[in-house]
Image (cartoon, rainbow, N blue to C red; front, side, top):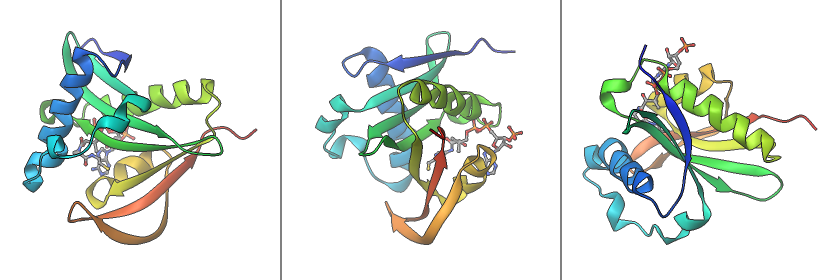
Length: 148
Ligand SMILES: CC(C)(COP(=O)(O)OP(=O)(O)OC[C@H]1O[C@@H](n2cnc3c(N)ncnc32)[C@H](O)[C@@H]1OP(=O)(O)O)[C@@H](O)C(=O)NCCC(=O)NCCS
């Protein structure tokens, strides 16, 4: 079993820069896009999380605070060679624990059609019709993580 380390990543850090590289490689380059063409300034106020194997980033995601104790999860990406090995589940479950501890009650996200099954396994439910984002089909999904 590979040693896995879950971390919250500081915005102004090398780990954040590693996360941007991974997000770009997994979520933007295959679509002919670049993350670095986007305005990333607001990311200083978002939360960033990653799962590492040694110093190597295996997966990451971004959490955007919304109103009413809700957050939006975006740009979840697991490095190709680490997929299907439980890294995505570990990352999302650990993030959930951090968010519950912070008083967050609901996570919302725009799931790529190809990732719907992953989020369903993690307890998310779909809402509304499919729509296009970065040229590919998505669906809104959400999960209640605190009942109080
Ligand atoms: C989607 C993604 C984050 C999943 O990460 P992962 O590390 O491969 O997933 P895990 O190995 O932790 O899988 C967790 C569970 O989900 C299931 N699962 C994983 N990917 C799935 C998929 N695409 N469809 C259906 N089920 C899936 C696994 O079988 C596993 O089930 P189990 O734990 O109940 O046995 C990863 O495949 C990825 O980065 N994909 C490309 C980028 C992407 O689409 N990101 C999401 C943007 S919305």
